[in-house]
Image (cartoon, rainbow, N blue to C red; front, top):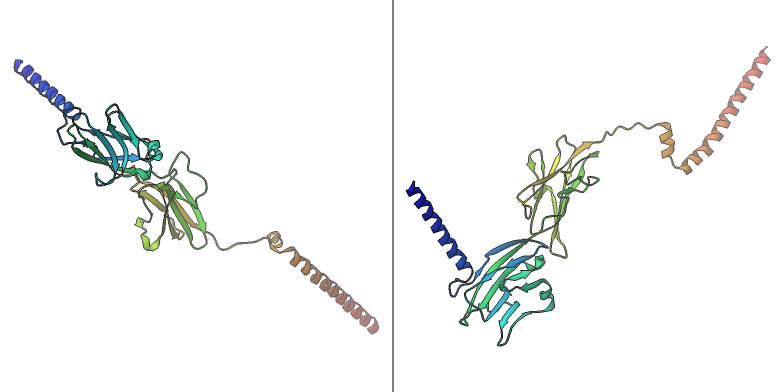
Length: 306
């Protein structure tokens, strides 16, 4: 029992010492000539992000840059130790509106757009006056606007983002188009019919870029009537591991159509009906007069023979 307690105390002690060591390393006990930064950060478009920069001692200057070369990359925000005070500055007002350096020398980007994607360098003039640096890569993503994917030919809006489905009718074929909009960086969009995926040969794909850098994509195919639905699939969705689908079933239209007399009259233009009336009425009158003439002629012949 005593051995178990000693073992527990030993494990707790080692864990405590290791925790203190790690905490000290990440705060003040950073080795010389070393800058700790986040290697990579993935940020949703419109969110804010903090890029950390840790180093040993009190620096003489800290520069946040964007680019690959710490010597030539342009400054974004800088902090310089003056004789009397410290000063912070931005390259221009537009940078100051979206970026700032906090008291820990971390860079804060208040509202990330696609333009902020790239490599950020924290370059430090340390307490010895030596320049050291490290970098963080920012990857920006934007999920497509709801609802997606969407069949353009299906009327109405999906309820509570439920999977969309509808049916269409056609005599022969119909073009169906599936869309996703305002996404970044990429998305896969394709149709499946009877367990067969339509490839680029049998589909028409259009991708366009919006002003803010997001993209819109549409995939169109020519569909024939079928008992099995045509399913549009969205995969590799930015910020998600899921797949989304929408479906449409294409039915044939019966080609045999029976029209009533009233429908026929309604489909005949008024001017044609008027011309027909002007022709038919005289013909009827002529036919009546001929019948009267024949009847009178036969009656007279009958009288003469009598």
